[in-house]
Image (tube, rainbow, N blue to C red; front, side, top):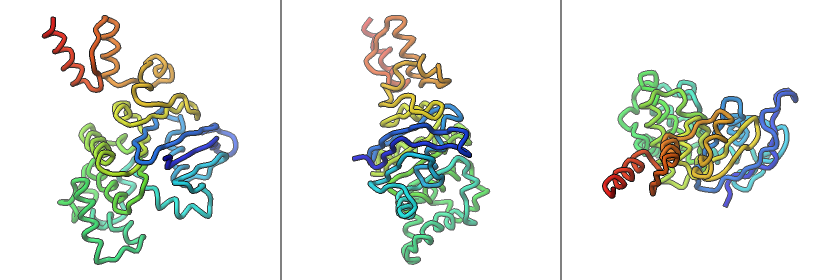
Length: 275
């Protein structure tokens, strides 16, 4: 079942600059989909259109069977939670606890139930010991984890990560990427990640590649990354393990699996032992 369907979507600024041009895509319920592309390809614009934060110039968007239009907007926004690029711009409360509580208050949740809900989702992202901390005392990765807890607490069926790791240091990036993977594994949420991170995309269920406002390629990770030249032509890289695999094949070395660098090393060791 598709939870999101987009048909012939178009978006322009001032009816002049075309950002998205005739984009059609489908996202399955419960899937982990990444949307990749270079700067200016239209990725973040697409995320904002799905969330109803921008008005489309043409085409249609359906979210969980509802057409995205003014009378359905309030209901559709309840289905979607979005985690933005800059965690500093997402804090509203004076403490971690207050920030997670904000969305619950807007949903008119019984105050007697709030503490349990806040603790549950703070624990889900490993921030249960920071509830009384002020946001400015947290690291970038911790701030982004709180932003995710705030989204989880309002229980949307779809979570959009809009370049959520791009402003973090390597440690923070790893924390959030691991958290996204665990959310996908342990929940029924539909996850959409707008990302520059090719390694993250490689571990998703399905990938859409945007280029100059159009769908350039779509498919499962192995289908997307099976032609590095094609991606290099639009200034996109391929995962490190795919690069190693291509080099091995050039040297006529065949291995059974190359889903990760660790698997490649393991398979090479087996080959060495056989020889």
